[in-house]
Image 1 (cartoon, one colour):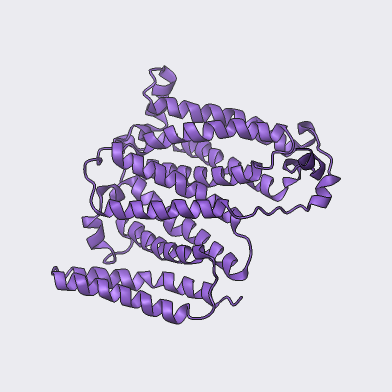
Image 2: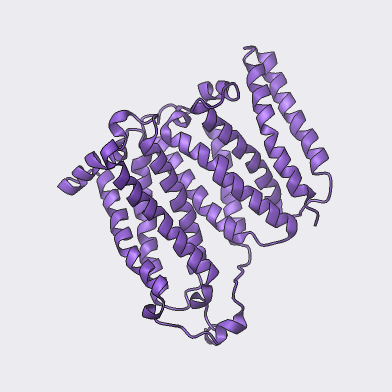
Length: 369
């Protein structure tokens, strides 16, 4: 299949830059006619771009078109993040004044950057895979984890945080995005799984013990303190009276007490989601034949990467009140612990996906079942 469709989506996504600028400029004429004209102009530009750039043969996979729209919106989110930090000006000024106040929090900044950079890259990779007829299930599962973590924390944080009563109609549009994305998640899960190792070679591959797999042994050892750290931060946001919890909050992560409630929800979701995952992953590394292990690590790695990016960035961002930012003398330890907590699961995911022989069952075992 020609790559023209994928290229067209890339160019179409970049059209969001002039569209945002035009829309913002026209709306600032502060009259309804300008607003209507801006909306019509946006639709017209999108229609013309889609007609000329996607007029050739396009894939039959409906997710191609969903990802095309999401790629467009990701660039918009990147513009929002850049304008919030005063790097650019005059593109989404009107939106930032009229939108839900949640978007102007430090957490809102971070998810704008994450969606505008990481999600955008994933959308382009999945579009390219669809265009060339390749499987994109691995990238899709990583996106599923990232999206679910982002959506759960953002919605619950909006509901229970200090902005819980300030919900605008734009939040309804965000819920429509959530509904469509959940459907996309099911579509990704329903795709056939692909493995790098052929079944014939798996039949003759001996299942080595953990001591014979030094890298897996390191991951197994890591999972135990990671589980403890995950539960510990969950107890901190639950206002545990332990002196350790109180000292940790004051000296290393005061952002956990931020009234926006995003970090509180983040740690609770991580405790309820990552906690069981570490136990299950420990089992998967010890017992051969757990075919679900590569998929599970993909989903969790995406979720943890999004969560930690938002948490680390918001903890240091100037939008966070000074009293809730990480103290200057503790930043080195804070970054070391949180970066390791983020990167090791990514390495585990890479190990499971590129060397899945240990996790695949022999054909004879499947027939016996």
